[in-house]
Image (tube, rainbow, N blue to C red; front, side):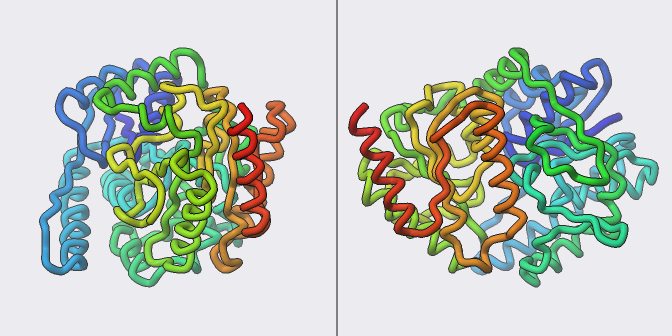
Length: 379
């Protein structure tokens, strides 16, 4: 039986689309690492035609020491993954990447069945940035040197096979993405385009109605500027710049700006702008199903919505990408090259002109925002 492990709503869109397009009549299980109630689980099972859907609900016990709570969650994850995988016999493992949780489940499934097939699928921006490289027959992350020691130790603890992640990724046969034109050309893997048709949009609408039918989008309808948050754990310099960028945006646009935090953002990271906490985990792609984004302005370091809103949903908002405002040590050349490639494709192949801006410094950023404000004021 095949299994899909999903850690975000964007990944859920990918998994459902792949299952419906390529493996509709076949048995497959879906593992969700975010909370859903029984009604939502049954609906997702029906939408994706899954044999079963398992929601992995981690216990969150309050402790006086945050680090103690983190250790408790890590130990619980490994214990649960080992117990769950001992009762399964999977033949094909689908994942957005081998990050900590996926690495645990894949490792135990691989131990149970060394012939286990591995496929990667679209998980957002990281699927389109040249973050992987092949060197001396091995695959590795270009940014691995930037990993903190605790995270490196955590990845080592999660790697139950003791193979390098590069060795494990060598096992991957296919890489399923929504846009084969934008994919980074991952050398070891065969790129497979995920069909995106009316039925895909219907499925996305169904997922929205199941998971978010009680949310109101009135805030996003009345605000012209949407700041998409980016946050890096433990990188104070980077996060301070993100807050500064948000403050400048709020100073220029005032109450027309609203913050849409990244799912990884901490509460209270930003000091200005209206903050919509209940919609933090909502992928911006599904927002395009609810409102017209044509005259909206998105401001972000980088985001998968840059290509997905244009490419999948044919929405054409303005985008201001702020990654050049970061310190050089907080920027990866490969990321910049990939974004230039993506923007170039969108402008040339999809006819999107004068909708994407990349300020080179803070003065340029202020000038671009002032120009866009004039556009809004004159409409």
